[in-house]
Length: 253
Ligand SMILES: [Mn+2]
Image: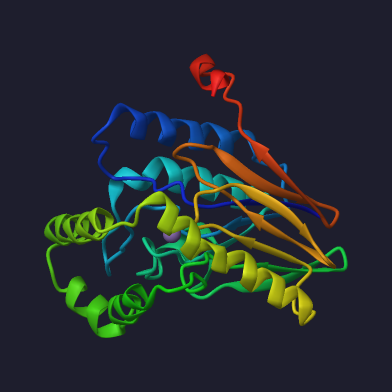
């Protein structure tokens, strides 16, 4: 079985920097080149920088990404989407119109005799109680319902303000690294308990493939700095970086 896992592209509806637009275009090109190559594609959270879909509405700026996801699905790939800390308010759009299965807290898949766990990782950081409380509140159905009562254009702006303020509170790199150490520890414990052979996560934005006793911890990295992804071919994980031949400047990174 050929599996692709990506995370943390933070695809935006509004590009405030030219880098955002470049990263978005690169992701679309990569996914377009992936059509027909994979049996399973795992989207391991924070694919969208902010997601919501209403009873009658979606964010039209996401159409290029949604279209390629639909094409991947139509070409035979099973699509699984694990919620991140930026994309979790999913309505029926992704499952009903794209054919994406949604897993709010992660999922374990069996393939080629391996148990593969996909999880974003935001609940596995260490010393992060404040975020865990915020997460409970923001994922609550009441918060989602109140948001859905707003005009979508206004809701989107409000959501952007909220996520911007949470970004401004973001930790310095050293503290972030200490917190995301929890992801590898979690992977180690799952493998020890024989609940997984390969644990694929995101969230840290650090691409990693670490062999452990009886398994692997794999982190997809991101599509902001690294343009990295994990392939699992016949049960063997590989960490790769996309080299964008249509955009030669990306080859120097
Ligand atoms: Mn995240």
